[in-house]
Image (cartoon, rainbow, N blue to C red; front, side, top):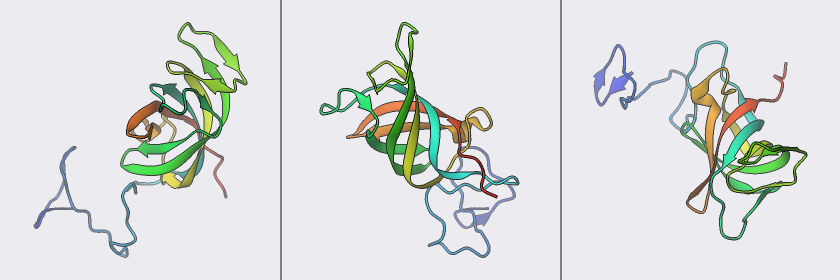
Length: 154
């Protein structure tokens, strides 16, 4: 671990440091990668999550399956598509299973597909790696937490 040209024994939260990884070139490490101990962080392209719809773009006043946005989790950014809505809950607490759309202010349980894999975890297990936002056209459309990841492949 380095700070500028000075080697460090440790770093504190919020400090900018350079981490040198033996056996990996600078072109092999990208923004959004996660350094972790065993067990390794999951890297997935599909997830089930709970989102709160905050704002929607002018041309899409409802959120439906097929809605596209940019998924932001920790430092990772990836193109995302809402593929299925399982249930919605409105502001009064009324839950609708199998809903086909959601409006601003609703909480939604849905499935999101990502263009490439992103290292994330369930919010329940690792809160920092389980939070994300969906953004489009410079607006934060939704904030959410990851509820479930696909089963691990052996």
